[in-house]
Length: 102
Image (cartoon, rainbow, N blue to C red):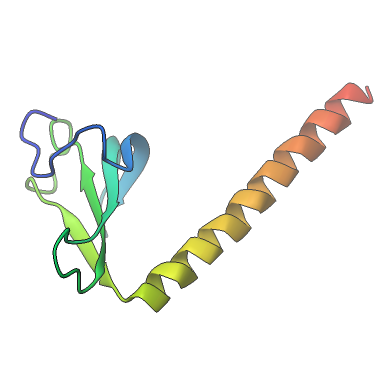
């Protein structure tokens, strides 16, 4: 991601994740950077930033999407992520157990 808009460093939340950009007439798989942050001084919101690797993307110009969340919205999102992470982990555990029964 040579044309990156986000700074990626040791404090970046997730510096390499699988991503998909979808539009009405296209779907492109890519790598992405995801970051959750707030201003160091006088924070007024939580920012969730996402930037796809535009080096392989032909439909979108280089850009970064950012959500500005209230603390309550950030906690709601975090709780939902936790819930779905648990479901995925439990499904993976069940699949492993099913395979070991064979």
